[in-house]
Amino acid sequence: MEKDTKSILIGLFEKWAGEEARSFVMLPPSGSYREYYRIAGRTKSAMGAYNADAKENQAFLEFSEHFKNKQLPVPAIYGVDMDHHVYLQEDLGDVTLYSFLQGIRKGKAFPEELVNFYKKTITKLICFQVQGGEGLNYSKCYPRQAFDKQSMLWDLHYFKYYFLKLARVPFDEQALEDDYHRLIDFLLEADHDYFLYRDFQSRNVMVVDDEPWFIDYQGGRKGALQYDLASLLFDAKADIPNSVREELLNFYVEELENHIVVDKQEFKQHYQGYVLIRIMQAMGAYGFRGFYEKKEHFLKSIPYAINNLKYLLETIDLGIELPTLFAALTNVTESEELMTIGQRSSLLTVRISSFSYKRGIPVDVSGNGGGFVFDCRAIHNPGGYPEYADKTGKDEEVIAFFGKEPEMADFLTDVFSLVDKSVEKYISRGFKNLMVNFGCTGGQHRSVYSAEQLASHLQHKYKLNVELKHVEQDMKKR
Image 1 (tube, rainbow, N blue to C red):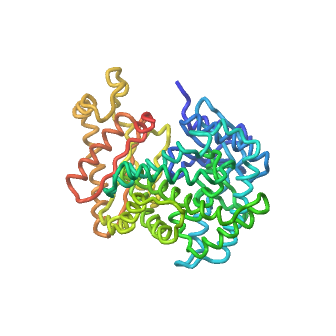
Image 2 (cartoon, rainbow, N blue to C red):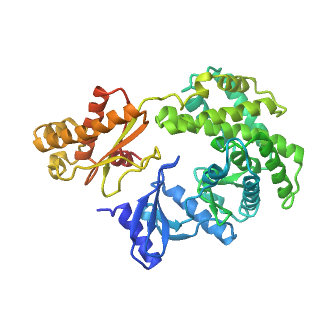
């Protein structure tokens, strides 16, 4: 039997640290499917990562070694087990540029301290793009070696199918496609022979001893300089004032001139185009995660992105005609529904999860620190019988099995009583989030059945939102 992720990562940690692991804590999920864990011993700590995508892991590890050799600020790699899709890396702490920004910013003001840190970040970014790109093995890039025409089409179609269509924004399909190709031809006029970080935003910059360190560059590839700058300055929830964006753009160009010859006018015109495609890519991601996967916190970024889009449409001058695209984008900016999305739900949301204790208790994505955790392992387990081995708690055979088990009925009676009391109190006090987790050995039978039963019970008894997730089953689908 394949060893579980936790034991493998602890083994890597103890081999590197030379001391016993005393804690193993899963970090809140990000926008990716990677899982991160902080592992700590008596004197040392490290970050463990699990990612089922072997090619993405290979890209990250290859890039990390290359950037370290260039003395760029990236985490050191302490251990790797490629067969089990895990690796151990340097722990850079918990302070991202986004959390740093949130901590010192008051209202709309953007303190000089923040401006100066962004300038430090920009200086290092240019080193990544120019020096970091020199000698890089681009054949390891994943899913593509360059941010080329195909990559751009993927992003633009992502926006079309997961944002425009799901938000019910009207457009002419063929005319929009024609505009897409005109935009791509314009973007590819810019010099695109540099390292493009791809997701260079405030959550991927760590603040360590008042210096920027970079993480999550596994999606990097060859491309134009303007894209990463656009990603940083138009990061939706960072909400950088337009005057500060302009100051930082000018600073970037001045710093870049220390490395290469720059045509400022041409650079800034192409920069506007890359801001446009980056905003659209981000909105496609918000649509996929929010509209399609029903993850409400991604919807909250949409109004910020629309404000960025409004500003861009008022100022953009690409020298090319994109009538259908700009008409669709204008419709987006004029939508009152989209501007208030993510702020509308006044109902309590109960997030119910089933999980395997082998993988660990799920993290509360609402930021409230968790809720109920019920241990189902004392209940008679159908997983011990061959006829139920390939079934889950959602299958009729397993449901019938538990229907004959009074200990499951007694267990759920107690669970319903406890959860009902909290739900009623939360509703009366206007609270928005409650989490309930059910764990068993494999996360397949007892926990899945219990989670399904509680979801059905709450939906029939109360007016609230229920989000149901079966962690182990979702992992098997990847």
